[in-house]
Image 1 (cartoon, rainbow, N blue to C red):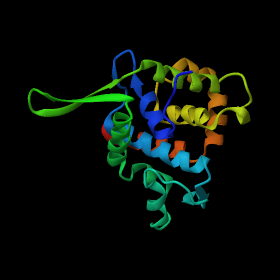
Image 2: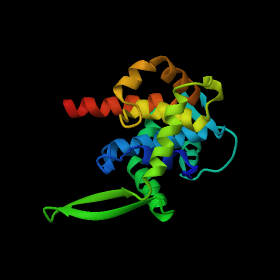
Image 3: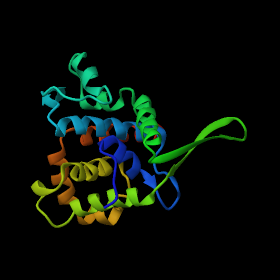
Length: 207
């Protein structure tokens, strides 16, 4: 079996990579929101984050690799959407640097027309992305939802929320609509917040 990153944000970053086009499938803004949602989800699944009155609250003390739990603990109660938006750009940079440091990806800096900075991301071993795809795909089929690995369930829920079509093509989303809802319910509140923030971003762009 091919080794994959342990953290959910790192896994979702790689799942957002389009192997056919050899580039990220989402804008940096959308990707930042997705990774914040993944960090919140990881904390929720591990019991380090709970929910009261539809707002995240600190749960069982534990590791806080991206500093999200500390932010929530030091703040007044705020919505899940707020924490998805909060420092999304910094989250993207941190996860990307982590993946570069650990040898999962390579990032090259370019300038378009000699003026505008652009990053070119390359996944060093495409089998890693395929392994993550396989986990998400298996979560849609077969075993009862309660027996699906929590990070595979989360990958499906977050991919649906962020509209990662490489993970969930339209046909699969329609065919497994009920299953996706069940996996999302198991994953916690963060994916719904990612979807709302994404929809707000699209609405603002259209306006």
